[in-house]
Image (cartoon, rainbow, N blue to C red):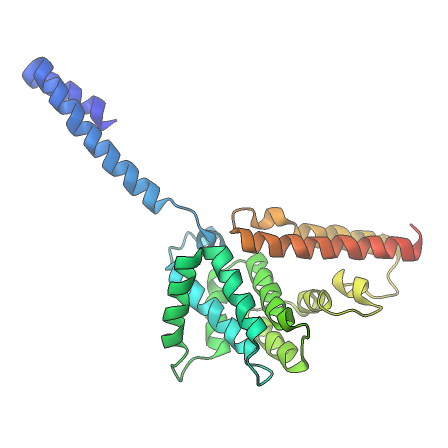
Length: 251
């Protein structure tokens, strides 16, 4: 745009030599503006996670540190620090943000975690005000995945995640639905679909449609790959639960 404008102005003053000079000067401005647009317009997980509906601009590093802080509360919940849980978190961050960025986040986190005033409630409250509900469900699934990384989700870990879910304003039914995905029990399919065992076939079908819509990966289409996989896993759990009830009820 500026290249054409510069050429026109240059021609009007210095004819063809001016047109050439104006064109190159305008091209330089166009390239500069293009770089600025590309830099400011880059999409990453945080532009999806942080409330787009309000048009807020936030510092991505804040979310990374806050998410890692919540992870640390879950890791320490049972009184022991499991290496498998630590490894899971590191792999997750590297996959989601890249090795360099993940390492930088862990480095900053080491300083943040030393602060005495850090609290799960404060961190979760900050995240709650800047994220959509669907994203907070994915965070909850991430926290359960951490607890399950060593093969066992303990009662203390469940209690900690339940507290965080409350701070994130996650509905109780959604908490128990995601929790059920990490435990094997006879009522698992019903719990995942958020219905009672006495539910009718019509109620089961309705619940499936509701849950499939809630956990469909398209809800998080612009999120990074690690988050997409988490969403896809929840969606599969919903589908498998429905298919299990289809066989059980014969419909």
